[in-house]
Amino acid sequence: MEAIVTAEEMKNLDQYTISEMGVPSCVLMERAALSAVTELNRGFLGPEERVLVVCGSGNNGGDGIAAARLLHLQGVRTEIFFAGSRERMTEETARQWRIAENYQVPFVMNPAWNEYTTIVDAMFGVGLSRPVEGARGEIIRCMNASPAKKAALDIPSGVDGDTGQELGIAFRADLTVTFAFRKRGLCLHPGREFAGRVAVTDIGIYRGRQTSVRAFSLGREDLHGLPARRAAGNKGTFGKVLVVAGSSGMCGAAFLCAAAAFGAGAGMVKIQTAEENRVPLQTLLPEAMLSVRFEEKENEKNLDWCDVLVIGPGLGTGKESGTRAEWFLSRACAAGKPVVLDADGLNLLCAHPEWRAYLSGRVILTPHLGEMARLTGRSAAEIRKSMAETALSYAKETGAVCVLKDACTVTADAEGQLFFNLSGNPGMATAGSGDVLSGVIAGVCCMYLDCPERDPGSGKKAALGVMLHGTAGDLAARKKGQRGMKAGDLADAVSEVLRRLEAEGGKKPSCRPHN
Image 1 (cartoon, helix red, strand yellow):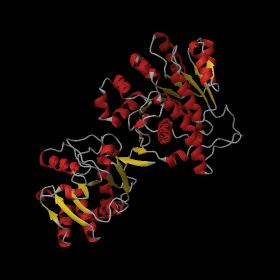
Image 2 (cartoon, rainbow, N blue to C red):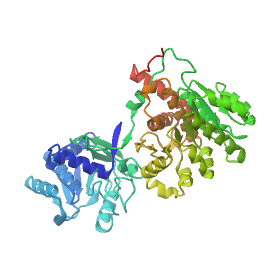
Image 3 (tube, rainbow, N blue to C red):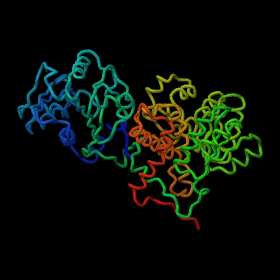
């Protein structure tokens, strides 16, 4: 897992390193500059470069001045444009200014923006909290309009370090070299787009016992940690998923969800659906069992049989659908069984707020922005500006896990744990993608049934499902292209991703055999 920090957390980590660990601020600044230059030299800078480093008054500007000096000393034609106020310089930035003057690094007053091959932005750091306007806004406009390659130090100027929102105007980087930890604003859109490729560099700031970070992103190594299937297992021990989905004539969502659950390793899948969906579902997915009668004894058998439930894909929001959803949601929660509540299951929850009494830490909600707007009574635009806070607040309020879906999906649990998903691509914005996700999350939940001692909790299991779903989306995009891929391609790619992980990982962590 990679830690993702807020501006305040980064400030505390920086201060902890200086005051408690005894590393001088000037040493951290030198390391930041060196790491930036090292990253720029990894294929970003060409042999005949003319570099302009645009610096502000804060410590981000000091990083830029130091980086300009290092480039100058290695023979790269480099100039500094100071876009701040000399009177408001921090102590470390003023020190770097004097050092740069001693090494005769050129300073320019009125840069000819189009004459540079690379522009490095070091105007503002992660602490920016108000819109960039006036003269500094015009500088960023000139930087963006230049044909030069563009790199940012720590975060593109004008991007909110916590929310990723554009504050007035933001620098559009091809590369962002961020120091010590990835910032939330580099994960969330539109900040993620402004950042370009992000390189996280080690400058000697580490998490200490007295510094807390509550947000993370998962990587491929976390998927490698998914439990292996026991050699002595069987279809029953690998997990049984009940998909309560599909109203009359709406079998596609049920199919995609069930297929994805199989792809993610569930041993058995049963679809509780309308009678009219029997033939198409048996044709599309003969491996799945069907239950088409909604009656007490049949329902109780289905509930006793399953290990994990998915409620909602294509279910509809009519009275009959509401009755089906509430029966399984209420009984599953009473029995302590994991539930993924998706799509129309969420729409029904909006229409029946009293159902929130059924929610707990074993329920995973998967709303997109529109569904979240209906759940919270806030606008989608407002939610997009506060993705992490919205997901976390709703999780704490309801006790459930909230998987808030967007270009960067945020997963939150009631204990305050957050996960930012960095996998996936725009091709996944296609009908049925969410149905696939709900099936994948159910499949991941099944993986841990055999080894409860390794269960990471519902929040992380949901985040692993999101990561697996995004990785499958990336594989599908490579095969089909982002414009041509469909949700069915995602479902197919899930099993291929797991196959590749097995091939890459060799011997994976396994569960204890049963006695």
